[in-house]
Image (cartoon, helix red, strand yellow):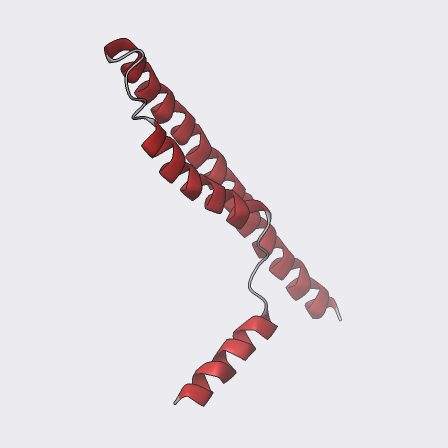
Length: 95
């Protein structure tokens, strides 16, 4: 029984490590998004104040990527053995 507990603990630890890494990577991505887009808005404000707000394009499109990254880091769960087995069955039926 000690082995099962040890294996379960290792599995949980690995899942926790993956989750923490995803969240850290998301925070890095978010900080990069904020800093780069702030610089782009500053360039726009200095060079074309009142002109067409072209930074809207990277803000929106990159923002979609940041939102998807947040979903992956905070909402989407780990892939389960059940999901893997379903996918294996689906692929076997396609052959």
